Length: 47
Image (cartoon, rainbow, N blue to C red; front, side, top):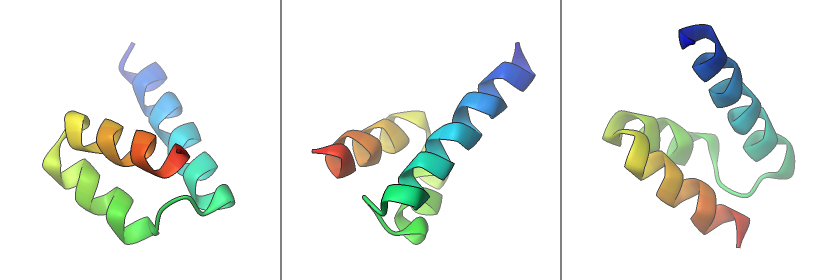
């Protein structure tokens, strides 16, 4: 279960990097702020 979470997280990070929705530093900051922060950044960049 844990490895699945990391796989999903890695796919999300790669997706964001490839499409350049948000800078990598913002993703790192979001991870530091926790999962809710990550989701906010992801949805904010996807719009």
